[in-house]
Image (cartoon, rainbow, N blue to C red):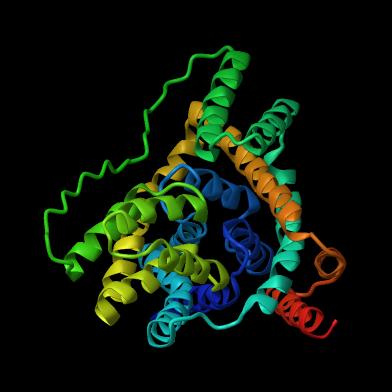
Length: 374
């Protein structure tokens, strides 16, 4: 393995061990590592990756690791980055699945998670501020970003908001320029999945195909994942809803992508082999989407029309991150302990050079102390 691949593996393995707080927090930590510290990408390029990643199915933060790995070390870097990022979550989730199957309950981790949530708010806020400065290039883009923020807070689907913003921005700036530009059409590959699962016996192949289907068409948050898995697993009688809720909880409180839930469920269904095939099925589409999409991003920048589209999508993506931050803040800062942790984290993020990883560790330990002893 060459030096760049080793570097990619180490960076994303480290992130995979400490990436709590959902996609917005993961991307904020990633920005700190690959833009601020290592200068692998400019902030403009990083924004382009965020914008385009939001338009394809799959876990956005995991796909961002793949894009960054591709930019740093080519196609091998794409696979090394993605695998390194999801590996810690898969191992931890598989261990929790074993304990759950053996003992019938999950370990008590709530005090640690309590402190992580308010800590990541400051990390996300820092990334929104830095990325927003780059994305908001004109007054029109500012207005567009505000509109996206409003509609997402009102409940409009994020993908609908992003695509609408991209199309609206592209048309507006095209008309404003009053120039005719050739448009090289580009449309992201969409998987319409009609995997007819005619198998009557629960097998590793059937588990793989179900999770492949979900991974290929999944857009949105952990709540959307819950709905998909409920339809695929609970209605088939493979899991009870209580077991599915426990599985989603595991994905929420382990580091890395929430889609590591697939490892937990796969183990419940078919043991260690089931965990492997469910994980492979869930993440395989993301690797393929990024492999196909990444070479098109520079071409999108080189086309005037698509550049307008990408600029609009980028500012919309930052608005969506801000929307997530607002919602998370309302759900997280419910008592004085959360407020204290959030304030300490904010000071560390904005006034010091402390790494986001150490801030998350601090938040976790402080949360445990405040819950258990105060």
